[in-house]
Length: 104
Image 1 (cartoon, rainbow, N blue to C red):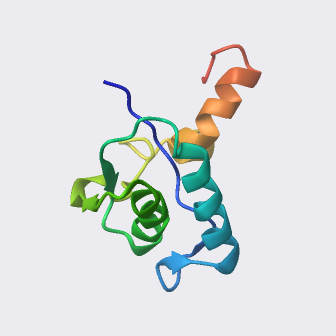
Image 2: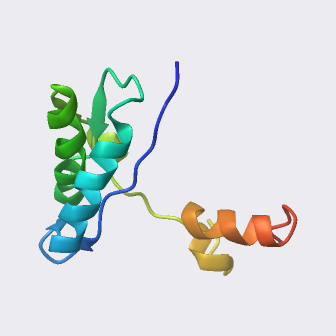
């Protein structure tokens, strides 16, 4: 099994949807993913993620399966000790690469 993760397009967080730019990004992601052999499309129940996933699902003739557990979670240390970017993985990964895998 192969999993492909796609982060939502440019969001309007206040209204939990995509911006016009986000819709463009989501359409482009759908085009890019058409030949990848995707058989299921999952999304968190956040509007911005669901809207993004709908483009790929439509292009592939699939339905989007919403999963509440895929919603954003809180990052950070358990005891409140500051950590880089509160541990957000999309920021921590870049730092780890720059620093040769060391995060502390």
